[in-house]
Length: 355
Image (cartoon, rainbow, N blue to C red; front, side, top):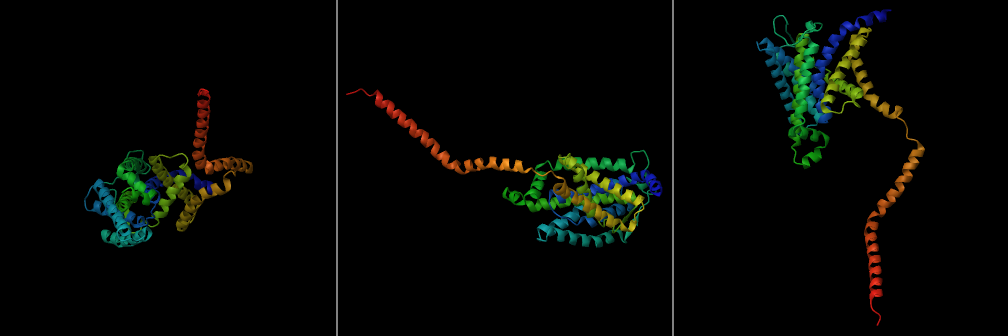
């Protein structure tokens, strides 16, 4: 009965979980760009997320409007990605170490931006785009509605950008950098640009979260890479066989973040210790990472031995024909040519008048 009583409180907590999932989903889209498109493990996101929140809050406190604050946060994220990209390409530092170095430096940068470990902002005094206070309102300013609109606009822009020549070259760089360089593509520039776009989205997500919760903290992005990877893996596991379009894959990442936060909210509603939340997050990510492996190993139908024998026997004549192909191709026309010459010579001999 106690469990049922706790589950009865779950519907009231779902709007907040969906709002947070959608906000973190924008960050997860940035992680997807580096993890799946560029094939680079970027750990900068743990503190570039906080950089976006710090810049946004300080811009609002200084009198800037909310849209200017969001643009400044995005530019700050671009700068974070630029530093990581230059460390990786220009200085030859491995991508993981470059991300760790930038992440470490950004902790001090975030402290310097805010002047202390956290800064709060009141929705009553400042014109914010989203707020936790409006999460249950049926209005346009509801965080769920507003973040869905922002996410759709961002996905549309990314879908257009990665369909351009520059965007396709970035995707080619992540798919096969050696072949891309052979085709004359500047892979170093593409890696830097991809990291900039990724961290710009991460910082934008941090700016939205700081408005939603009403404060920015120097460690608000700790564990962001885990949440981003969880959203990517969950989205691919659920929608991998359905969504093949690039835009739909980005949508699946955003939905994966929402599913992740709903699962966390469900577990917390059932009375799970909040101090073990990071442990739960790691367990959820590990399970969803293992699901594709388990599907292939334990749940896929084995190929019957008879089918294997039939395919082997059918492949043997083809292999023999392929191995004898060049000789047959050379000898066959010559043989037919000799037969024609012989028949023509016999016909001419018969037509000759007898002496």
